[in-house]
Image 1 (cartoon, rainbow, N blue to C red):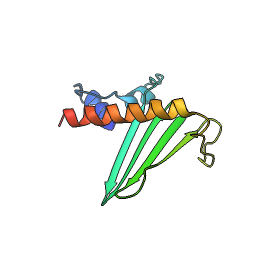
Image 2 (image 1 turned 60 degrees about the vertical axis):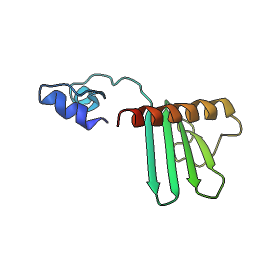
Image 3 (image 1 turned 60 degrees about the horizontal axis):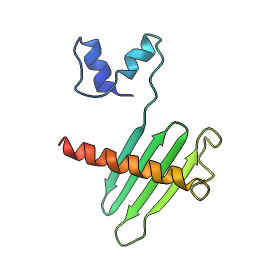
Image 4 (image 1 turned 30 degrees about the horizontal axis):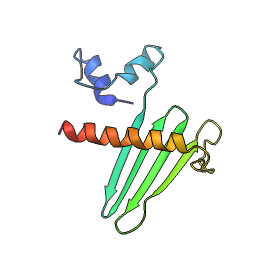
Length: 110
């Protein structure tokens, strides 16, 4: 949920970006589909993730080690136990590219 956009809408103003998902839920409106992005860095390790519809791509990078990636189909595997990246390579590429573009967009605004 984009809490900042929701709180600003409830206060009578608009956020420069984001969607007031919480307000949509409270008012009974269907929330629009959107991709979700996440990145966390701790020391030399970086985790990245992209959620698009039922797919979730996760990548882990440690300095000096090859990157690891996983792809999960949450509709068929909500507990993320079966990595499907080898059978859905095009989806891995698509989500990896979405994540890269998101990171460039976030950096451009700061």
